[in-house]
Length: 330
Image 1 (tube, rainbow, N blue to C red):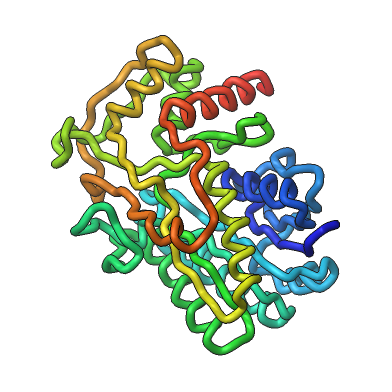
Image 2 (cartoon, rainbow, N blue to C red):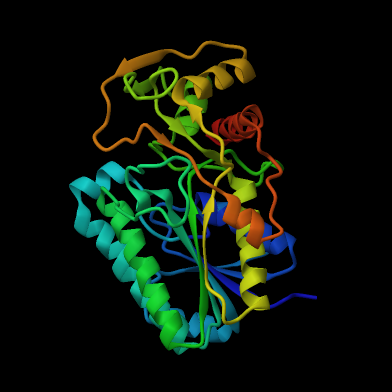
C-alpha cells in the first residue's frame, strides 16, 4: 500500500532522480516537477508521474492538491559555483526566489513536510575540519548564499505555519545507482569523479588538477565524497523522521566524515579502470578550501541511516558503469 504522495522538484536531475528511485522503492507515490532545462525526462523512474513545470509556477499548487501531496523534496536549482559568481542574479532567481514561491505553494496547499537539498557551501571556508552543523555559516559565493537564504526562509516559515522541514547539507556527491537506473548525465559537469570517468571513457582527454599547494598531505584539495544512493536513502529516512515528529525541524550534514584528496581520487580511477588518466596541474581556483569534510555525527544520531556504499573505489565503479552506459546511449 502506498504511503502517500511526495512531490520531488528537479526529479529529472542527478540527485533528484535517485531520490525518486529511493522513494518509489520504499513504497511512496511520487510526482516529479521539472522544467527539463538541465534534467532529462528519461531519467525519471516510470513509477513516478512527471509534470513539466517550473517550481515557481503558481500552478504547482494544483499539482499538489490533485496528487494529495503531503511532503516536498526540493532539488531543483542551479548548482555551478563559478557560474554563481559570474551570474549571481540567476542563482538568486533559480534558487532563492523560486524556493520562496515553492514554499508558499506548499503552505497554501497544506503540505506538512519539506526536505531541502542544501549544501556544504553554506559554510564557506571552514576554520575547523570536520565541519559540524553549528560551524559558522559564511558562504563565499552566491550559490552558497542562495541556499543558506532558503534554509532561513524554511526556518521562519516553520515557525509561522504547520509545516516542518529538514535541510540536508551535501558534501561532494558522486557515483550512480548500483542497478544502473540513473546517474549523472549533465553535459559539462564539473564534479571531479564525473570528469575523471569521462576521461576514462574517452569523452575528455585529461583531468585538470586545480592547485597543488593546499595545506593537505599531498597538496591537493581534500573533499568528502558521498555516494548518491546513500544520499537518496538519507532523504527517505529524513522524511520518516519529519512525519514521526511534526513539531521537529532538522538540519544535517550528508557526508561520510572521511576526506580524499584530488590525487587519491584519480589514483582510485586509475585502479578501477586499470589505466592512467592524463592529469594536468593547474592553478588554484578562487575560493577553494583546503579541505571540506563533514562531521556526520548528527545524522548518525538522528536517523537510522547508515552508509552502505562508503568506499571510494565502489563509488568510482558505479560512476564508471553509468558513464559507459551513457556512451552506449550515444
